Amino acid sequence: MVEPYSLADCLANADALAGEVVDSWGCAFSKDEGDAGMPADLKVLLDAACVYQSAQRDSGLQREQFNRIDAQQVAKENAMRELFCKAWVNYHVGRAETRQ
Image (cartoon, rainbow, N blue to C red; front, side, top):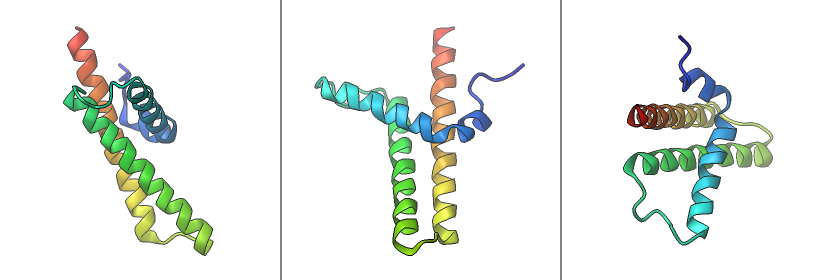
């Protein structure tokens, strides 16, 4: 059986998925919904997406300024990608279980 929300799939598509999470929150926020009343599992997912995107920005700035990226920054970005993906899988698995 193939898991519909696998960590490997998320890791392969982390950039797009993190963008979707942040964009979805942005749409809710622009409707004055904000994060008040946001379910805790969604808040964890949003926070993880924002931290991952921040690590990506830091890596991009380092590449632009120094024309290279150090191993510590690569490790940070990879760790934040994995953190986001674990949160993404947990969120979607939890939602799927709730619907059953």
